[in-house]
Length: 184
Length: 433
Image 1 (cartoon, chains in turn green, yellow):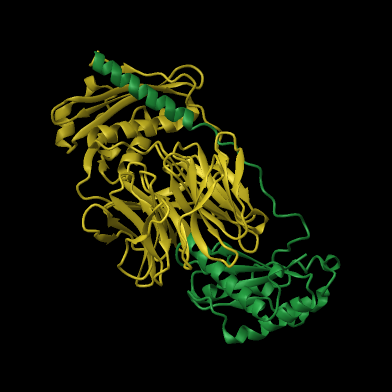
Image 2 (image 1 turned 90 degrees about the horizontal axis):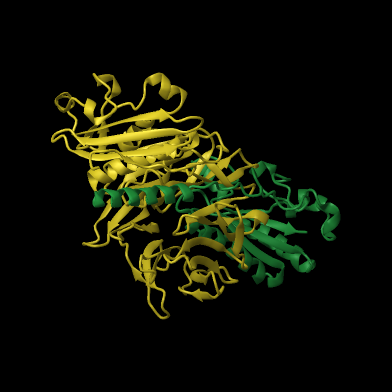
């Protein structure tokens, strides 16, 4: 009797605790993207899939560098692609770096965010590290050409914001990238 | 008294929120265990009653079969359906190959209240092993049934059942460039999903607090990573780290007072830090030019397992949290071993390994000679997380190009997939008990 009661009580406690812990997780506030106007997903980089282009919807506020020039001129190239598991900048992107470095040194008020990305392979948090490494490689290259440290910030999305979907090499190649995002 | 049903009533406790999301999982057992224990789980009610309300026996049967350790007798082969021990013709059930039999009843008790009574017997020696009664409302029947499965599992195997625990995971809906990221908490079988957090920017790395009441996670809202801690019951959340650079990979200390995090210096060097949640004091644990990330605490709270590529490719290391301790490398096979998770008894380490260009879940024996076994066969198997009883590992996999959750037993013998009806699912994290 004593044993059975004890067991009964302990099971009761277990169940009661489980029931209490399983209470209702209230739905959190839905978080909308940042204030309209600062980001235009899929802006003028539509050919590359998802991307951001603050200049696309924000021509008047930037002050420097007309929107038109960014959309069509050499500054319109704002994505640097990388080889698998690599963060060194390939020679074909040297011009792109130089073009943006000149723009930034000519306009010291400009701020540029470097968004590092990886393909989907590997673990998610380690990929954050790889994306950061790529963004840093671009940051160093720009600084070597005279861009002030204060003009540059980096962020890594790892594999979380792919440009294109798909699990083949052609998709992966488009996802291993650093996007240059001019900040308003 | 021993023979009588122990009566157990939970007045109004088993109350649940309405489901907020219609996504359901289909469980496919892809590989079962050969020596599974045969058990007969007799329907608790007539089929038409079960259809109108709830089929307790089916859910218990699904849970036990899904564990791979039980083989549940097909209902079609049952020649009688006893609901109490007195009605069991043991010789018949033995002849049908059963070692155990679970019988029970679910009876309505007025409006929105049911009583589930059940008894578990050893068919061979006719010994009564369990006899309980649970009261629940309609919404609580699912949890009550998982608890019946937990008790059966525990009684027969001596291993605490984890069927009534929960999982957290990230779901990604929509197609590029507009995606919706959701942090979801569901029952361990994927049912009963609730949205904890939703964002148009990535959500990552959910981590349960040791008491199962809160989740830490990474959110890229405002397009920058921050670590949040959210209390599930109220939805109240706190941003605990939004430093310049990366804020990633939160992991709770066993005493819940600290979070291990991955942060970066201005030049982008990722290292492991420990944040004291009370004092906000930040302690740097690793200092190496390579990527150090994906920390997890040892059970005694004195050291951290983590991933580092200080030696070239990513490998798993362990370091004490006291100043001056040097990391010790644990993995040596192959050139990619990352995201360690330790089993609840710390006898085994699960991690992601690369094999023939594929990413798979491997386990390493921590007590013996460090033998490594690759448990899965997919191409993109990542994010392993142990059930709180250590019996199963849930992980993220791909099925026909879509992100799905999958399970493998810690010995690799049982495998199954939880196929979601919508979206991509990733980064499962199994709750504590």
